[in-house]
Amino acid sequence: MQKHYKVIVIGSGQGGNPLAKRLAEAGWKTCLIEQRWVGGTCVNDGCTATKTMIASAQAADLTAHAKALGVDIDGYSVNLPAIVERKNKIVFQSRDGLEQKLQATDHLDLVYGTATFTGRKTVSVTLRDGTTAAYAADFIFINTGVRPAIPRIEGLDTVGYLTSTTILDLKVLPEHLLVVGSGYIGLELGQMFRRFGSRVTLIDPHSRLLPREDADIADTLKTILENEGITLYSSSKLRRVQPDGDGVIATIDKHGTEVTVKASHLLMATGRTPNTDALNLAAAGVETDDKGYIKTDEALETTAPGVYALGDVKGGPAFTHISYNDYLILFNNVRHGHRDRVTGRLVPYCIFTDPPLGRVGLTEQEAREKGLNVEIATLPMSRVARANEVGRAAGLMKAVVDRETKQILGAAVLGNEGGEIVTILQVAMMGGLTYEALRDGIFAHPTYAESLNNLFAGIGR
Image (tube, rainbow, N blue to C red):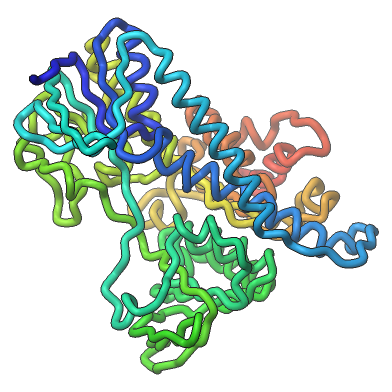
């Protein structure tokens, strides 16, 4: 027997959950299929989990440097099991609250199991009890997300390596953590465990850190991390590993020379891969690219009419807020007949190192590659009164401005509360404000926002 729905949503991530809930609230009979836990990566082992633990690392760092603020602390210790327990409590609260809201929604069936396409708009679900169920729908939305990607490395299958998921449940602090990968995940987790007390070595395959960011921003962050005691190997690749008791011996190609590093733990932070391999997308007529990401048009429709993809599984910016915006576009288009598109939207993001890096719009290097006539505003965080007052003066603020229109084209804020500060600049961009409006605006003293006066003070005068 095949059960028919108006809507099937496969995957309950940060786009799939609100989409299923709102369509059901609109009276559309909806089935939400989840293989693991509701909330997706963000709630369970991504944003919520990691930022909760990073808060503990920040507390450890503040304690370690409290003497600079005139507070003497006679020793402290990091209780990793307690940190993990706190993380789990917050994750469980978020997950359980979300599950209860979904289950209480009229016209919405929450089904736990693994979905596989059997036709254009039909799926078979292997339920948790081992039985199967067959469903069909007028609209199908795929929100299955991504998972850690593990490259082929000689000997990797002989050692107990960690991923960004499994490392969050460690109860014993690594003596020496070797991090393979220098993206957002590797940087955040590497700094976090350094502050917990681990030695940390990070392998960066690029010639400089964060090659998509401007060099001055990336170099400033590199200096901050190295000042905390993190060892960075640039232009380096992991060639092979072998067991060393409970640890690992890694052979690294560093600038063409082989070096050997012994570590107690190995973290593979080498990117993400889409959860599409079990979906049998060919049966639905849904095409993927060579990496397995689902191909969509500007309205998020796949190559199969009536089948859509949202969130990380379609490629592109892999951020929770983008997944959420995907949901808004789809809801407006499918439910209300709008013609919203993903093109032209601003893509803000934040790397939660400490200090964090908030980013939006064009970098300087992107603007110059486009041949734009721009001016660049920069301000060291050491010249921000609020940053000095709270003892958090590391970092750099930067904005890219169109010389003729005076519009802000992009911004980067590497500094304490960088994500919050860059959001002010994003709102200015959304509202079409010129840099002059921020340069001459009145902001409360002493706040980080007030530093925008000084950031733009050197332009146009």
